[in-house]
Figure 1 (cartoon, rainbow, N blue to C red):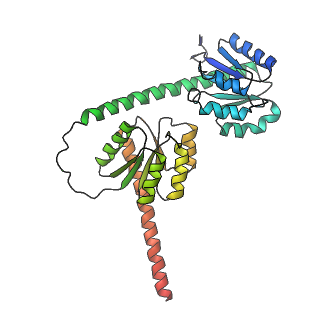
Figure 2 (figure 1 turned 120 degrees about the vertical axis):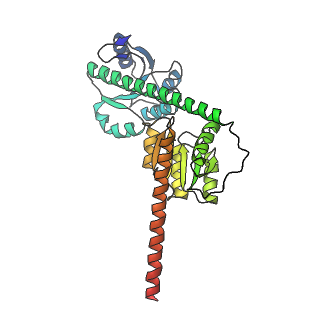
Figure 3 (figure 1 turned 90 degrees about the horizontal axis):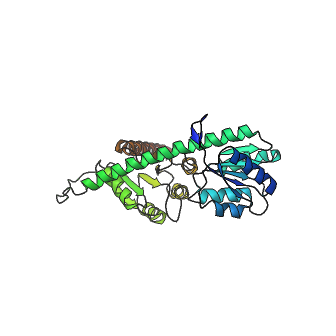
Length: 311
């Protein structure tokens, strides 16, 4: 079924509320508006129901007994099946002060009861429209990435028997990416443009590299096994706060990407990028690092001269 006013097909909605009467009324209204409705009367049931079939959007009561709405929200965002599903918090007016916390935890919208039914429908339909636009973007990026991977695989047979001409690398780059093909593509691109490249498939390996030698720029995938990209960035900035970090992500507007920038990442680029995008981001990061190093050297020279004058 399609909503003619917004051009969006109705979808599957998971409604979560520990009040059976309120849940039944909400489900009845949404079904009447053309949505397929899944219901859950507790947080634990919501996380179970959300796995299959996957909802397109979740309406979540914040003030439930037992597992709190915040715990459910975090659980939904942690599940692969529902991590991208918009979550609308539905709660009493006296809990409106919790809006900022709910949004920070990953909620996409906030609706205080009693609400206008038309307002609820408008918000749901707009969020579903945005979700589908993001899905279209993701499909496009995936297609571009597959084309780039195919190009790389086709060029991998180039003769590499001749010894490379010695050169002084422009900078030393550390790539932190658990996918072998993507590591190879990024490394091949950067080496081909004069950079020395080290690669790490995990967060611990990246931290070890950083402890053993100087790195000019770090490229970090946001999704890593064992430790998330944002958590790794926080550790990297502790070990080497002066080293610029460029985030590589498949979800440019995700909560994690924003968090990474807040933690001190220099820039982020979207997977499926053209080569020039990565080269430009790395070049800018290298320039930033070089300027900082020059400033540090100049400052040290000034301090040395001042010390000599005071002797």
